Length: 269
Image (cartoon, rainbow, N blue to C red; front, side, top):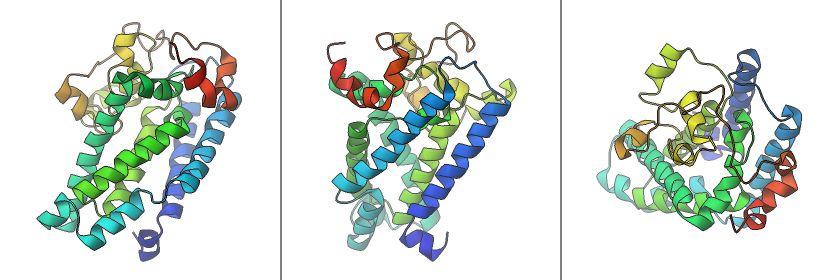
């Protein structure tokens, strides 16, 4: 990582985001796992417009983001990892693993607490799962997630380089494991012992509640196995599993304005 990229990682992160998005889109197009039920151009326009909107919202509302918090923690030697004074490579490794655990727990909490689920449900209301679903989150959820991340950056003493590495991994893995693409079953079985695969995460997007509320991992699959939230396959199989949430089935709900207002219009569900 160059000094310029370290001082301002925004272009590095954006470049990798676009690169992974394109690679996963090509993979989906070449080896689709399931037939899509909604026009892809319509969904992609709204899902990716939401990504752009979220970037603007974070820039306007948040006084600092996780990278800036990491710089502050590093300069003031705040947090557990700064106290331990570990070698850089070990610091980064431990930080990435612990932050991934934090994201797993945050995801579980967003499913368990009703007001938070109403926000997160918009992500699940996508009627298909593909690479853009991995980027589709309500702006309020994005803000809350950033607050959680900043809190743990300070508490853990995550270094600036570690937070850059983690955020790149998190974004790339979210697009990878939401991809509507085939992996050879043997490769999937081996990969999911460590990381979340598309078939593993697709279970999480089933309309069946027991499946919706399982497989919370974004990058490492070990947390679901460790905490008993792992479910290997959907009950109906990957070809027949119904994607989404039962109460939001109208295809017009995939429009940007509908996405933004879903948590409030479906508040009683």
